Image 1 (tube, rainbow, N blue to C red):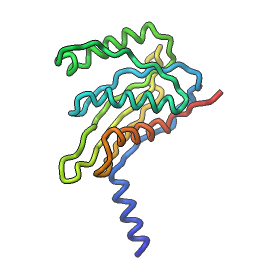
Image 2 (image 1 turned 135 degrees about the horizontal axis):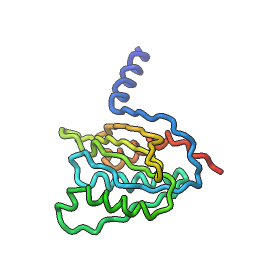
Image 3 (image 1 turned 60 degrees about the horizontal axis):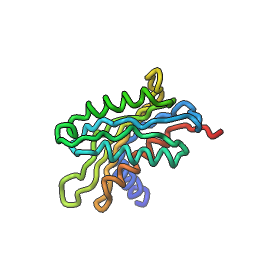
Image 4 (image 1 turned 30 degrees about the vertical axis):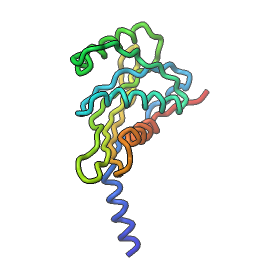
Length: 172
């Protein structure tokens, strides 16, 4: 009976998360990184910007002091909703930077589910590319549904941390 209960609990909890995190090639800890704009495929405005800030903090915790693309100075709603101008400005900025790797990605989900408890749901894909050749070295994706009293940002933090655990950072 205990084994059946343990198996049922494991199946229920595992249904709330899904990760595809391959091991990455070795990246030197002293390499220079840039966080570039993420694509917001969710229905939540500014979800990508929130995830980028969490990503930058998580990289720092792993020993990578990444630079962030400069914030765009936009004042109108159409510029906020159309991220192509932001990506264009970030690419122009990147051309003037001396960085080895770029980390970016997309937000697939960043919201609270509707219903009685309103659990958070987050889906993120991360990608590491060479800043010079644009070759992709690593890509990982993950989704997680949180519990009723958990925040979307807290759930996003967990997803990003789990994804970044796949990065192989060699300390010198």
